[in-house]
Amino acid sequence: MKALLRPFLLGAVLAVFFAGAASAEIPGIVWDWAPECYGWEPGYANHMSQAGAVLTIVGKVDRFFDPFLDLDPVATEYTFIFRDLVSLGSINLGGIIITNYAGGYFEMYKDPSNNADFGTNPPSVVSPATFVDGALVLNGELSSFFVQMFQGPGGWSGTYTVDVELTGPVGGEIYDRTGPCSGTSGGGWSDQAPTIPLGYTVKVDGHMNIDECHGTGTENATWGSVKTLFR
Amino acid sequence: MRLVQTILAAAACIALLVPAASAEQFLLCDFLGYDYTAPMPRNLSNPNVYVALGDVDNIHPGAVVTDPLNYQYTFVLNSGTCTAADTVAGIYGRYYYNAGDGTFFIYEDPILGGTNRNYGTNPPNATAPSTFSDGTLILGADFVNLVIIVNLNNWTASLNGTLDFYCGEGWGNLPCFDGWTFAGETIESGIPEGYIWAVDGVVYVEEVLVETTNWSDIKKLFR
Picture 1 (cartoon, one colour):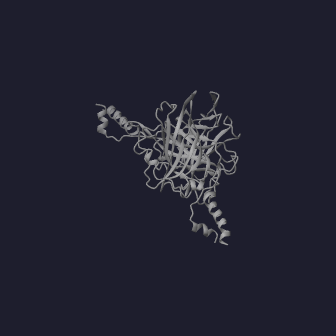
Picture 2 (cartoon, each protein chain N blue to C red):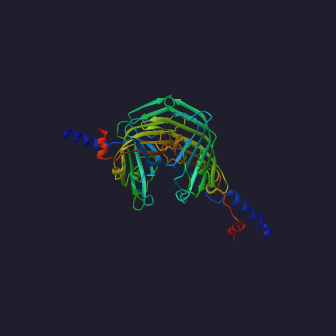
Picture 3 (spheres, one colour):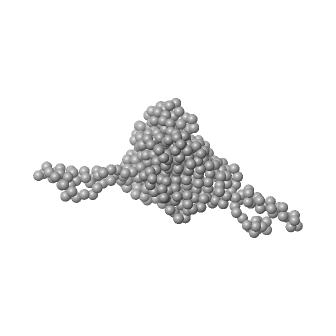
């Protein structure tokens, strides 16, 4: 009897470990940030990005949406970084400036120390260091990072948009609930927002939108808990 | 002597009421939602109006003390009349709304006993914008100027406008009534049917700095 069940149990274990436990139906906007997200890149001047300059953005999630409503971004900070975005150089189209960036990575960290600090003149002792400490809960690869900006009645502002592929890490609090997914991040962008800390070049008011999930998240389990499923 | 007193009194008023050095701006709120045009969908030109609606958070406590656990905070942005439009470099459409009839309103609606905001589809509809504009008007502004640009290649759009706050229960708490807003408008998968973009933006309000002084200091200014 045990010999008969063994392959079945092994299959069940594999299913739990590799096929996942949670639902991956997560369409739409999943989190947002506004007051605290800024970026910097060397050589940025007169609203223009220099080809080859590397853009870094750090920030803190201030609101989660369904299915992450159980996460409390006030009690425990969820910080993130967009890094290694290489500028292809800005182009001025009659007063509307567009910039494309190549490559890039996204990471999110959960940190109960609540120590995120922009400081000034990044990179510095506190930034990005205080945005990439804690536990890595999600990471991904970026592509097609695009910025457009113009001088409106209130000042220079615009929009950014980027494609995101969520790729890990297994064991990360958020990735275990999403699994591999495609998404987009976008929102407002201004290099003249009044609250930009010294040395940063842009304020980013964005959100994350998950378009499609390709699999399901995984859940760590013990032999005991697996056996319990079949009792 | 009476002339001097008059001058001094006027100087005192100026010193107390006019910004002493500079004006700073602070974040009044953050907003996130979806937008549409009406009566024709996906058309920003006159006679259509552009409408954005959604959630508001991070409202500055100096203006309104919020209670997000018990109240829902929503906004409705109405562009008003499109007064002009042109193209830039053949790639961008640019739309101006400078008639002064555009508005930006923020509402507070109780979660228990209120009406939950509902985008529905193909707005305007039975629930949008009505479930976003019910409750108590806490801050309201006219657009002085508003400009929207649309990238005709990838349909990414941006809005930028100046605001004049003039109404709402929290209006009297604002240190100044001049503000500005900017937002990014992006095409995404979760946009409800009939809406155009996800719109994510912020509002800033100017904070007028005043300097407390006394008669002696004012007199010194005239010596």
